Length: 124
Image 1 (cartoon, one colour):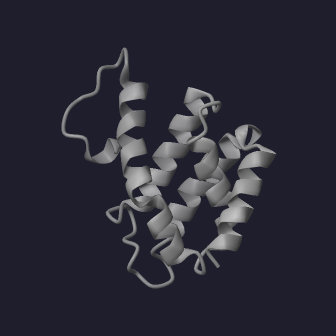
Image 2 (cartoon, rainbow, N blue to C red):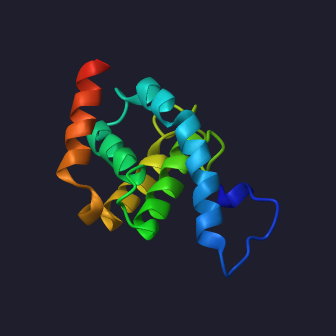
Image 3 (cartoon, one colour):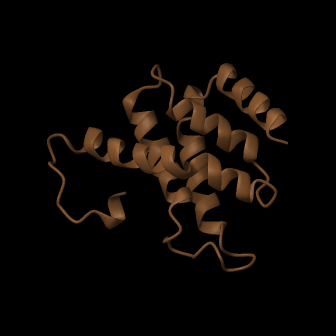
């Protein structure tokens, strides 16, 4: 993730490098964390649809990078407001996620939403 990188990324080719790093974090922990906090957040379906959009090969690189960065911020426990703080722990995560989802919502397709609904039905 950007805020914990130890080396300066190559400005000519930074977006793909950052995307790969964020994608590793998201694939490793997103679904696990979502299961843990699904009842605490009110937009689980949109969040899951954003995940499916970010992992879709047809999603444009810029949209994918925005979503992966926001999803990685959600997954990593070390953020602006630590997740364990009752009532406030997820407010920063939610703000980042809502901003990211709204900025790329034209790329979140019906198929992503349907996948999210199926996933939620199966994992109830």
